[in-house]
Picture 1 (cartoon, one colour):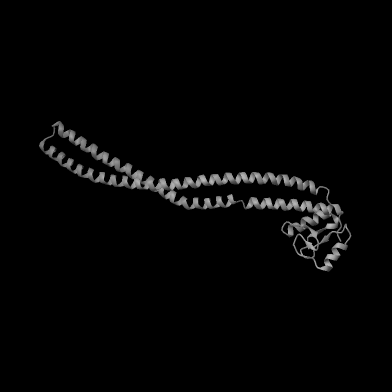
Picture 2 (spheres, rainbow, N blue to C red):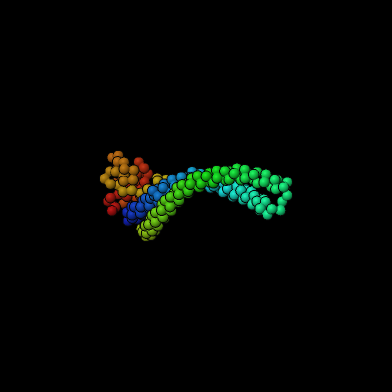
Amino acid sequence: MATAPVEDQRRLLEVQALDTRLQQLAHQRRNHPALATIADLDARMRDLHGSLVDSRTAVADLEREVTKAERDVEQVRNRATRDQQRLDAGALGAKDATAVMSELESLARRQNVLEEAELELMERLEAHQEALAKVEAAHGELVSAQEKAIAERDAAFAEIDGTAAGVTAERSKAAEGLDAGLVTLYDRLRAQLGGSGAAALNGNRCEGCRLELNAGDLAAAKNAAPEQVVRCEECGRILVRAAQG
């Protein structure tokens, strides 16, 4: 049956308390509210990303179409200007002048059609630009909220990590020189039992599992030699008896 110095068994409760504190800090780090906020914002940004890409693509396509429409209108205007200059110069014969006048009429009709198409494209572009501005504003708000949440997370992590570093140093000091066999057993139990490998025997109750020992187990624990490492019959943890404290 395992034995360890009484003082080492008592100090094991100090180590357990510090290990429990480290577990609590790790839990705080894993479950900090900022993490859920960041995850939610990430999901919302992913959902919005498709709309943002589609809207930007639509605006870019319409901008190209408007540019092309402007070029088409400008080409017709330039052609009409040249034809009008030829007429104004008075150097054309009657037949050529008639042909140029006919072309000017055709160009005017063509220009009207192109300008109407250009106006329609510009109206569509304006509508899409307004829609894009709204989507980008929403995206910008999400980015700002995400940056705030990340800053909150980082600040919280820095504080938690700083505290954990101090507790870890305390833990190392508390565990220094403890009976090797006792520590090995404690670490094994702690790994098996959710981080708690040792607990105080308070009256007839194990503070690890919070269950009361039956009369026989309680008597065996109290009557065991002080150096004997007693285990809880309910949960298996190392029981540190009050008489040792």
